[in-house]
Length: 84
Image (cartoon, rainbow, N blue to C red; front, side, top):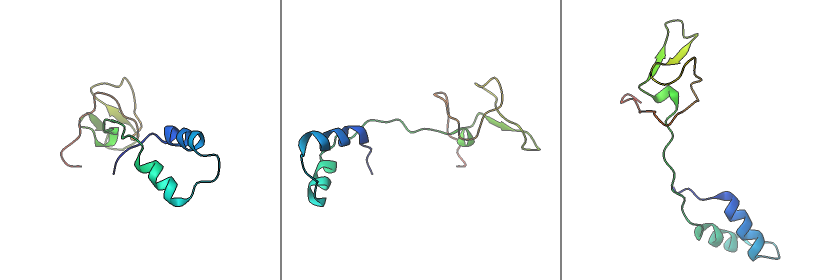
């Protein structure tokens, strides 16, 4: 799998074609899209800095957040736990 910029793909499709694209033309356009460089995101739920209290009511990042965090949050300081 590779990541491509969908907005750029859309702009290229509009710019290069005046009529409806056939499947072959669309697949070729997708294939020719450049791959974007992206860093993997580590969500709080998979981070070594996550601290859950026993009642699971509050979840904290013990290293970076000043308060509760959502398990879907992420930050630039995240480090993946080995058990995930």
